[in-house]
Image (cartoon, rainbow, N blue to C red; front, side, top):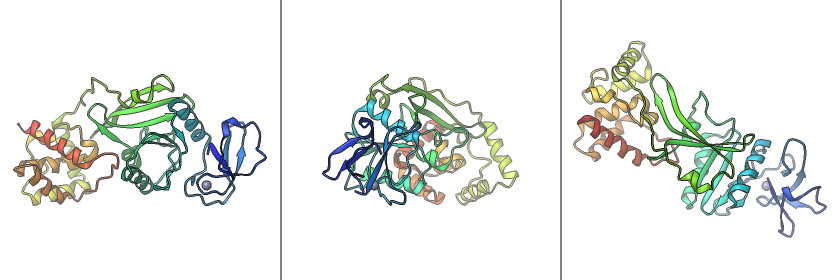
Amino acid sequence: MLIAETKAGVKLFANDLNERPTEALICPGCKESVVFKKGRIKLPHFAHKPHTQCFSFSEGETAEHLMNKSFFHQWSGGQLEAYLPQLKQRPDILVHSLAIEIQCSPLSFERYTERTKNYQKHGYQPWWLLGNKLLPQQRWGQLQKAFCSYSPEKGIHLWGIKAQQKEIWLVYAIRNHFRLGFVYRIKKWCFREEPLEALLLYTDQQLTSLKWNFTEYRYHIQRKLFLDNAKIHELQQKIYLLGGNIQTLPGWCYQVSDFYFFFDDRLLFLRYCFTKAANFDEWLQLLKYLEFTWQYPLILQKEILILVYQECQRLAK
Ligand SMILES: [Zn+2]
């Protein structure tokens, strides 16, 4: 942590200190005593004594996390390590109702979801930025996907932060392709290049569409069936129950989608249901057979379903 308190409640910034203060210092969250640390690798900071159970600073802070937090704070202003008592949470930086969380170490999906929902419930907007270890490269796990947001201007996107380069990264226009895997674009900003609002409002006028050959995709599905892929068989069963066959759906069902990322091949089920439903509400009823759980706490499922429905309307014409 970068801020500690004296017993009288005076806040001290680690950056302002040259040497260990003589006064006893405590953690502003749990009120246990902390020590001042200054070394070659990490920025000056405070740390709990070993084996302290602190509810608001549970993870040991890495050099990367301390640097990112300090740069971000210098750039954005806002409150550093502001403790929010109703939530029992402490965002790294708070700028009005924007709760900035810089995540450099692994985190469970459950813990991430819990923290995110807790912010949302209390009227804060969480903004997660991922450090080196978590920023997706080849592999996109459940957690990386769960960090994604959606807007029409950026498509599916997430944010990263690079301590060494002093940069913020926007990974955007993220799509999943049945053969190529995850594809995306990256926009980088140096700290202080632009104000924080400019990053949040960034739009790309040319979100290019994905090259996707629908006959190749249909073949890809047939091949998975032939190879006894369990997920495709399960999907085939669900489509059978509604009277269809996953290999012979109307041609438009195999066309490219901006939302394949969320559903992968299950999108075929959503599209087949569209051919069976008279309106949006009927369609939603049919989707229940998919038994699908939404794992994107930063994105409203309903918003995406409306867009998928509109895409079906466009393609089925
Ligand atoms: Zn503490």
